[in-house]
Length: 485
Image 1 (cartoon, rainbow, N blue to C red):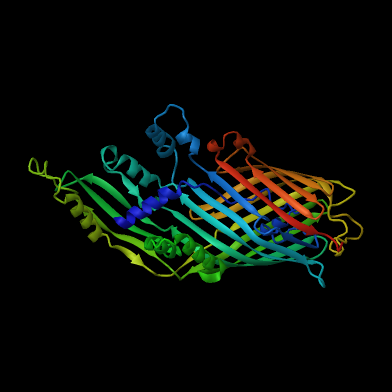
Image 2: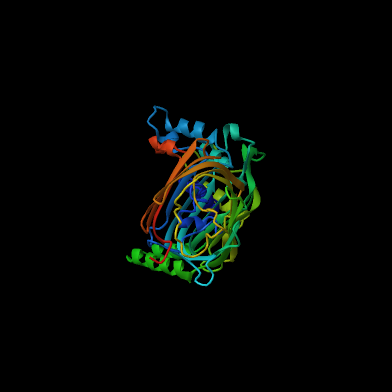
């Protein structure tokens, strides 16, 4: 039962963080070098770029498909218990999720091949945190309402417990190659250096209370549950030791894990851009086809088996004043004995959340002075036709992401406006499970070699961010050169 309690607590605790992973504003915004990270086959025209360390790409994104902070904590005169019942338990299902993603680039550098000007190479590192917890509907009802009253005879599904999370440092190297005037292909290899990972994604079983034979009620439990962790035990041991040097010890362990001193993995990204004609382009990419082998510092919890218990037998009036008769402990010991639980250090594979993007873009309003003039690299030469600069772009994007309970998808429509060499704006409207009113705006500014961009999603929610189902922010600084000057 101690193991089951940890699993249930983990699911409810993880439900307090809310983020997601779609980068619809950055995707195919090719004036921004970081667009290579969501499509290694995006169009590139610069000669080289370098990000300002740590500040080149800072990304946070948040979403909830169910309740918002305002739903529970608004000062609206409604009792909190009533809010939980009506806005959580009665509304949210086991496919509603809370998730968390953030990325911070350490370094990023890109350069065009000296002998192969059609090739653009890029490399760098970034720190990523990704956590998802599905709402454990049946377990939440059990915790809030109990197993008596109207819940007698109800089977509570233990499969509702589903969560995973990780923090990793990623080392990557990519190649972007222009195959001709129409086609650009790209690929990126990644080494994952895991700081920690946990998952409980293949649980099954049930808990039911019904009319008993030897007592008023009996409870039946059938469970097969597991919480797998890699890298957690090391941090736990530091705080458990209570040496007074926790801060420095955590920093040291974090640094070691971030630089290939923990569990390692490997992944690949692929992407392309193809011009159907000089004004129409289709693109696509698939990201994080990879895994991490969790074989070091593994700490797993298991809870499996089945049993039926008659609960506590109370004899009246003898037991009414005997509050120290260990009846509750006897019940817990009985369940613990019938349902084997324990810990192990068995290694396991954790798969990265695969993401797929696709888009179609129509360019119009040909300009007279493209942003990518004077590249000096020959990559834009195309028989005198300006294939690089149009003032306007209009199109649509598709995003899909593999999650433990299926694929999450989003559709985006966008309009982009370019203002000569110095600025470009992109507006988006996105529909997904989190919001039907997600309007985003991205801006890219080029001040000589200095590049600054900022991308903000779901602008309508900022009047009351606590009531928002979705919010996202990304910004960064780069140095970009197009020629030798």
